[in-house]
Length: 147
Image (cartoon, rainbow, N blue to C red; front, side, top):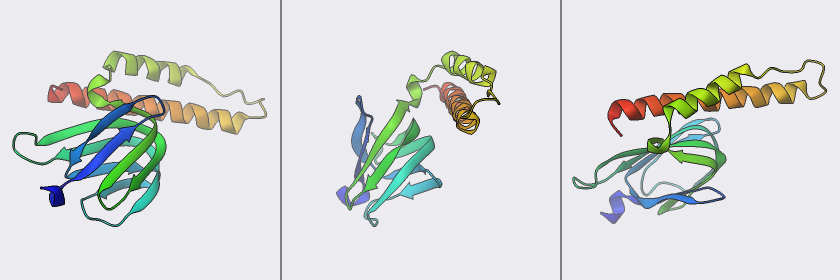
């Protein structure tokens, strides 16, 4: 089964979230989704904001698992995929109510147009809103699937 799977690790600066064998990974790269299969060419890419989806091999361990990812890097070698994420959370750990509160807080933020850093501030607010919206969506989908 080793040729049908590859090792995948998801780590952040503070902790390791996942380390196991997967048959497929759908990675949120900075410029769109990137599918990863076993025995594919090595690659290094910047991570963006999105959902990492992992699929497992076998009847007893078969299934899927998802993670909220926000920034970092991914490195795929011949036999391993490592995601060094700035921020990563297992979807089953997301709280819909906390995500909604985070979204409300992000949507309440406003740009000070008199500020010298108004463009940077606007980008920061947009990123916070996008991140919170994704967390809300993932939490709702997780709850609907019964995770």
